[in-house]
Image 1 (cartoon, rainbow, N blue to C red):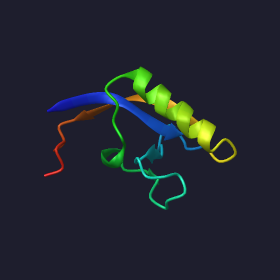
Image 2: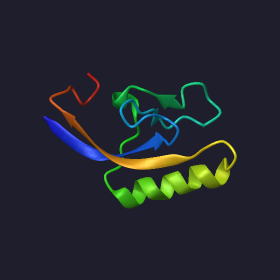
Image 3: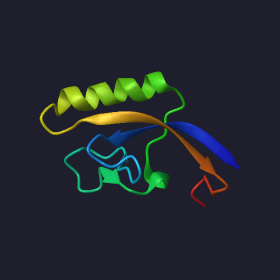
Length: 80
């Protein structure tokens, strides 16, 4: 099974080993994870951009992000 979508990555993480936003508040210890299976997935680039803008406006001193298209291939995508 293949799934593609848009994710929010920390801009100060390496593109080769990005940190993905998990949907947790940015002040939470688990807000960022190197596990792409924990990343919030957006179907549209526009949706990811809107959420990223909100994150940056709400925490302007703490966060810079990038929006990236991501593909999950051959993995159990439903979490079961």
